[in-house]
Length: 207
Image (cartoon, rainbow, N blue to C red; front, top):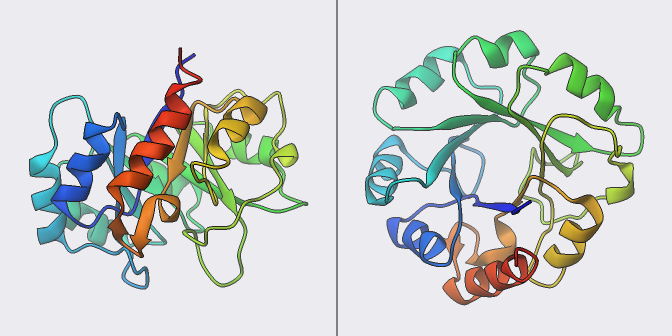
Protein backbone atom coordinates (compact mmCIF):
# COMPACT_ATOMS: atom_id res chain seq x y z
CA UNK A 1 0.00 0.00 0.00
CA UNK A 2 1.21 3.49 -0.86
CA UNK A 3 2.55 5.33 2.17
CA UNK A 4 1.03 8.78 2.51
CA UNK A 5 3.06 11.81 3.55
CA UNK A 6 2.04 14.77 5.70
CA UNK A 7 4.40 17.70 5.99
CA UNK A 8 3.59 19.48 9.22
CA UNK A 9 4.42 22.86 10.69
CA UNK A 10 3.78 24.78 7.47
CA UNK A 11 3.87 28.54 8.06
CA UNK A 12 4.10 29.93 4.51
CA UNK A 13 2.11 29.36 1.30
CA UNK A 14 5.32 28.80 -0.67
CA UNK A 15 6.29 25.95 1.67
CA UNK A 16 2.87 24.34 1.22
CA UNK A 17 3.27 24.55 -2.55
CA UNK A 18 6.77 23.04 -2.34
CA UNK A 19 5.34 20.14 -0.35
CA UNK A 20 2.60 19.60 -2.93
CA UNK A 21 5.03 19.93 -5.84
CA UNK A 22 7.06 17.02 -4.53
CA UNK A 23 4.06 14.81 -3.84
CA UNK A 24 2.89 15.38 -0.25
CA UNK A 25 -0.66 14.21 0.44
CA UNK A 26 -1.34 16.58 3.33
CA UNK A 27 0.04 19.62 5.11
CA UNK A 28 -0.21 20.36 8.82
CA UNK A 29 -0.99 23.72 10.41
CA UNK A 30 -0.10 24.24 14.07
CA UNK A 31 -2.58 26.23 16.15
CA UNK A 32 -0.62 26.17 19.41
CA UNK A 33 0.90 29.44 20.54
CA UNK A 34 3.99 28.04 22.37
CA UNK A 35 5.13 26.26 19.20
CA UNK A 36 7.72 27.98 16.98
CA UNK A 37 5.59 26.71 14.07
CA UNK A 38 2.37 28.30 15.31
CA UNK A 39 0.27 30.05 12.66
CA UNK A 40 -2.35 32.73 12.99
CA UNK A 41 -5.78 32.28 11.48
CA UNK A 42 -4.78 34.82 8.81
CA UNK A 43 -1.65 32.85 7.90
CA UNK A 44 -3.63 29.61 7.81
CA UNK A 45 -6.25 31.14 5.50
CA UNK A 46 -3.53 32.15 3.02
CA UNK A 47 -1.86 28.73 3.13
CA UNK A 48 -5.08 26.76 2.64
CA UNK A 49 -6.18 29.09 -0.18
CA UNK A 50 -2.96 28.19 -2.03
CA UNK A 51 -3.57 24.43 -1.89
CA UNK A 52 -4.72 22.61 -5.02
CA UNK A 53 -7.57 20.06 -4.90
CA UNK A 54 -7.02 16.68 -3.23
CA UNK A 55 -4.38 17.92 -0.79
CA UNK A 56 -5.60 17.72 2.80
CA UNK A 57 -5.16 20.46 5.39
CA UNK A 58 -4.80 19.17 8.94
CA UNK A 59 -5.10 21.45 11.96
CA UNK A 60 -3.01 20.58 15.01
CA UNK A 61 -4.34 21.59 18.43
CA UNK A 62 -2.99 21.03 21.94
CA UNK A 63 -5.54 21.05 24.78
CA UNK A 64 -7.50 23.77 22.99
CA UNK A 65 -10.92 24.91 24.16
CA UNK A 66 -13.76 24.00 21.78
CA UNK A 67 -14.43 27.70 21.22
CA UNK A 68 -10.84 28.19 20.06
CA UNK A 69 -11.11 25.32 17.56
CA UNK A 70 -14.47 26.53 16.28
CA UNK A 71 -13.08 30.03 15.72
CA UNK A 72 -10.40 28.54 13.46
CA UNK A 73 -12.91 26.35 11.60
CA UNK A 74 -15.14 29.33 10.84
CA UNK A 75 -12.38 30.82 8.69
CA UNK A 76 -10.00 28.01 7.73
CA UNK A 77 -11.04 25.01 5.62
CA UNK A 78 -9.57 22.07 7.47
CA UNK A 79 -10.13 18.48 6.41
CA UNK A 80 -9.05 16.86 9.65
CA UNK A 81 -8.05 17.75 13.21
CA UNK A 82 -4.98 16.45 15.03
CA UNK A 83 -5.26 16.43 18.81
CA UNK A 84 -1.75 16.50 20.21
CA UNK A 85 -2.39 17.09 23.89
CA UNK A 86 -4.19 15.32 26.73
CA UNK A 87 -7.63 15.47 25.14
CA UNK A 88 -10.08 12.76 26.19
CA UNK A 89 -12.01 10.73 23.59
CA UNK A 90 -15.11 12.79 24.40
CA UNK A 91 -13.26 16.06 23.90
CA UNK A 92 -11.88 14.85 20.57
CA UNK A 93 -15.30 13.77 19.32
CA UNK A 94 -17.26 16.85 20.36
CA UNK A 95 -16.04 18.95 17.42
CA UNK A 96 -17.73 16.49 15.03
CA UNK A 97 -14.90 16.34 12.53
CA UNK A 98 -12.52 13.55 11.46
CA UNK A 99 -9.52 13.51 13.77
CA UNK A 100 -6.21 11.84 14.53
CA UNK A 101 -5.10 11.33 18.12
CA UNK A 102 -1.42 11.90 18.70
CA UNK A 103 0.28 9.66 21.25
CA UNK A 104 3.73 10.42 22.65
CA UNK A 105 5.22 6.98 22.95
CA UNK A 106 7.47 5.75 25.76
CA UNK A 107 8.29 2.29 27.05
CA UNK A 108 5.15 1.88 29.18
CA UNK A 109 2.67 3.34 26.66
CA UNK A 110 -0.22 0.96 26.04
CA UNK A 111 -1.08 1.65 22.42
CA UNK A 112 -3.74 -1.06 22.33
CA UNK A 113 -5.54 0.75 25.14
CA UNK A 114 -5.23 4.04 23.25
CA UNK A 115 -6.73 2.36 20.22
CA UNK A 116 -9.68 1.11 22.29
CA UNK A 117 -10.21 4.48 23.96
CA UNK A 118 -9.90 6.53 20.75
CA UNK A 119 -11.68 4.07 18.46
CA UNK A 120 -13.50 6.95 16.75
CA UNK A 121 -10.18 8.41 15.56
CA UNK A 122 -9.23 8.04 11.90
CA UNK A 123 -5.66 7.20 12.95
CA UNK A 124 -3.18 7.23 15.81
CA UNK A 125 -0.26 9.55 15.20
CA UNK A 126 2.72 8.14 17.08
CA UNK A 127 5.41 10.59 18.17
CA UNK A 128 8.36 10.61 20.55
CA UNK A 129 7.66 11.33 24.22
CA UNK A 130 9.14 14.47 25.72
CA UNK A 131 8.51 16.13 29.06
CA UNK A 132 9.37 19.50 27.55
CA UNK A 133 7.13 19.57 24.47
CA UNK A 134 4.00 18.08 22.94
CA UNK A 135 5.78 17.32 19.68
CA UNK A 136 8.16 18.69 17.11
CA UNK A 137 11.19 17.66 19.14
CA UNK A 138 13.02 15.92 16.31
CA UNK A 139 13.48 12.84 18.48
CA UNK A 140 13.00 9.29 17.24
CA UNK A 141 11.33 6.73 19.51
CA UNK A 142 11.79 2.97 19.54
CA UNK A 143 9.57 1.71 16.71
CA UNK A 144 9.59 -1.77 18.25
CA UNK A 145 7.17 -0.37 20.85
CA UNK A 146 4.41 -0.28 18.21
CA UNK A 147 2.25 -3.44 18.39
CA UNK A 148 1.89 -5.32 15.13
CA UNK A 149 -1.82 -5.91 15.75
CA UNK A 150 -3.04 -2.30 15.88
CA UNK A 151 -6.12 -2.02 13.71
CA UNK A 152 -6.30 1.78 13.51
CA UNK A 153 -4.07 3.29 10.81
CA UNK A 154 -0.70 4.48 12.13
CA UNK A 155 0.77 7.85 11.20
CA UNK A 156 4.44 7.67 12.16
CA UNK A 157 6.12 10.87 13.37
CA UNK A 158 9.12 11.78 15.48
CA UNK A 159 12.54 12.65 14.10
CA UNK A 160 11.92 11.45 10.56
CA UNK A 161 14.37 12.60 7.88
CA UNK A 162 15.39 11.59 4.37
CA UNK A 163 18.07 9.46 6.01
CA UNK A 164 15.75 7.28 8.11
CA UNK A 165 12.29 7.41 6.55
CA UNK A 166 12.80 4.43 4.22
CA UNK A 167 13.89 2.27 7.14
CA UNK A 168 10.95 3.54 9.18
CA UNK A 169 8.47 2.59 6.47
CA UNK A 170 9.99 -0.85 5.96
CA UNK A 171 9.96 -1.58 9.70
CA UNK A 172 6.67 -0.04 10.82
CA UNK A 173 4.65 -0.18 7.58
CA UNK A 174 2.62 2.88 8.60
CA UNK A 175 -0.37 4.22 6.74
CA UNK A 176 1.43 7.58 6.60
CA UNK A 177 4.56 9.37 7.77
CA UNK A 178 4.60 12.86 9.26
CA UNK A 179 7.64 15.13 9.01
CA UNK A 180 8.31 18.65 10.21
CA UNK A 181 11.79 19.47 11.50
CA UNK A 182 13.40 16.93 9.18
CA UNK A 183 12.61 19.10 6.15
CA UNK A 184 13.38 22.53 7.61
CA UNK A 185 16.16 25.09 7.29
CA UNK A 186 14.92 26.67 10.54
CA UNK A 187 11.90 26.10 12.76
CA UNK A 188 8.80 26.79 10.69
CA UNK A 189 10.71 27.49 7.46
CA UNK A 190 10.84 24.52 5.11
CA UNK A 191 13.75 23.60 2.83
CA UNK A 192 12.54 22.53 -0.61
CA UNK A 193 15.65 20.44 -1.26
CA UNK A 194 15.06 18.51 1.96
CA UNK A 195 11.40 18.02 1.07
CA UNK A 196 12.45 16.66 -2.34
CA UNK A 197 14.98 14.27 -0.76
CA UNK A 198 12.43 13.05 1.78
CA UNK A 199 9.82 12.43 -0.88
CA UNK A 200 12.29 10.57 -3.10
CA UNK A 201 13.01 8.16 -0.26
CA UNK A 202 9.30 7.53 0.25
CA UNK A 203 8.62 7.26 -3.48
CA UNK A 204 11.24 4.57 -4.01
CA UNK A 205 9.17 2.30 -1.74
CA UNK A 206 5.91 3.12 -3.51
CA UNK A 207 6.89 1.54 -6.81
